[in-house]
Image (cartoon, rainbow, N blue to C red; front, side, top):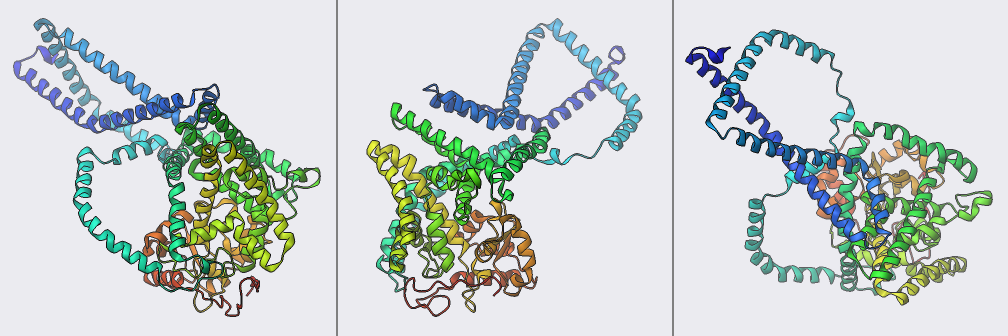
Length: 627
């Protein structure tokens, strides 16, 4: 071998070995850094999980709950924990191997033998590389031709890839220090502007503006303060819900798209439908609503059980932050999907006055409003009475008790003026006042029954334990007030000045929506073709596409309500314009932007959208869909 050859050959072989080792180390450095980041990310998640287990295992009910949670996030946890465990073992083995190597080469004889072996190995590798070069290239080319194209699953980033990306995007210590220094340096300037900002706000709140009855008796400064305080009340828990559940949904979606979950994607949805379809034909008036049944069954058991678990823990241990977080995070679900589905079900239930169920199963009619909904802040009969007999009479005109048409929707502060209106509607108080004015006693009786039941339970819980009632019962009610207030504020924010009553403009349509629960995104169809089944809404839109196009209807694509609200509150009209759909394909981006701002700026006065209004609640004209 070359190791026993002339000194020049030995030096050449040693130089080749050193170069190859350096190149290998340089290539492995980024991968090693990424592995370390993933390792510590996994270990950090494991530490958080241990803290959660410790906080929830004070009674025998805590561990089953944690076990259930691990089953839900099993695919994510398995990949991350397995990776972390393997990397931890590999790291330990590498350290142990280095220590053993250092010990074995501590004597001159051992060092000389190791050097000779390394040189011999390098020489063998070099000669092998020269002999097998052509064969290796030929084999590699053939393998490349024979390798099938990557499946879609392998191109989807996994949950742990997203965690790694988030970990690496965190600001470094230097960046964090720079941000802190910038904040400190900018504080004096911000404080200097604060009095001027307060003065401008006060002047804006005291500008003379027409307000519909009964809001004319609620001064804007009082309404604004009310709105701010209500948002602040829900903000701490709501922030935890958003910070925890939105990333959780992204992780679950990422894992759902992985190859290892392909069997689950192929079998689970059809397995659920194979049960819900025949069950729907048996128990439902309209079998097309069979997809309601799994949600009713799951949340009809899961959420009440969760509530009574939290009640028992509170009775035994008092207020626990861990229990409070676990309850609300599991109650609303990943990215608030449980919240969204229950409120959509209550909405659909309110429109189905004959009920979903038939025959002997009619006993389950209104189960969402009366059994599941209250844990999400729903007042029974509110959708059935107030939503149907007020909102769908006036379609957000100024007689609607939660209209926003007298407000400037381009100003984000107007939202705080709107919060009290929607709150009084959601609680049932303003609908009762309107029904009394109109002397609709049957509606008053029905709504009063639901309000009496809901607020009776509220008073009972307040009498038993005010703290528990506040954070576990009143909070979901206020949470629903604010979140649904925001959705309502968006759905009917647009008005065309030349045709104020045009519902193709007044109601928003979202195509390819990211959060389209049972086709709620087709809001025009919902308002003016209410007998159209939700599964037929896309087809109905296509059938009336020319009517939408003729008035440049308010349509957005590839977004969802939360993003639209964010852009609207930020004044990010460019992003709204990018997602605005012009079915005629004539408007430029600038023209779309101007159209959006103009429609959000239109305010309706005391004559209403038709110009014929005389007094509060006196008219209830409903514009036909074909107009």
